[in-house]
Length: 335
Image (cartoon, rainbow, N blue to C red; front, side, top):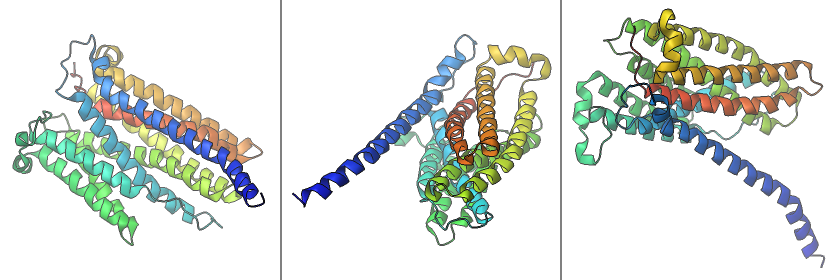
């Protein structure tokens, strides 16, 4: 009897913890599946009634682009927050396990899938025989697609190396490639558009990936005062990031939808509808960030700010999915 009682007690103690872990895993899985439905089903819903033609495989392309964006946010956020944590006095020498290698693998697969689409003339390949890998070297889009594939491969190798901070260079290459891809030379003032996208994408990756890694770090630090200090330090930087994201987003929208037509195009074009959905999500994210900042400053326990911050991470995940969807839709005509 004495041998079985401690075992039973341990099982009883571990039961609630195990159940919480299962519930958390199920919740994450449900959120991921819901996020995947946005790029998969979003194109048909956004294009309905607009008279615009859907691109071949737009749902698959939007999903691949969403995975690529998410794979960029995770390591960028880790590098950013690890740097912030070193600036916190008395920070515990505890860091969560890096997700950068997994993110690099996911980004590599997504970039490879997008490169295969480019190699077939922006058509979803039906078989390996449809691929023209050599043709990728002959076009601007093909070269940028190959750059992203190689950059994620290099980021994965850097993540496994003794100096994971070197990931910053291949990740920067991905951001530059995405900024150039989004604004071809035939577009009006493409360099200005690429510059706006460069700043927008960089700040969005820092904000989204940074908040995710802050919350993961705080779980390892427990309820120590340094946790509140790290969250406060991130919140101060996040204000600047939000301002930059808003400014570049507004400028980019006005370039593609002039002020005199923007209200009409927000409801009559697929791009405008999804852009409006993205704006509403960002407003919700900003409200959650303000709520978290209020708790951080005014609550008796500053770490209660983690509750709205977790909701903010979920909302940011949906913003990433909507952003992936936005890249697969036809750009509105400048009337």
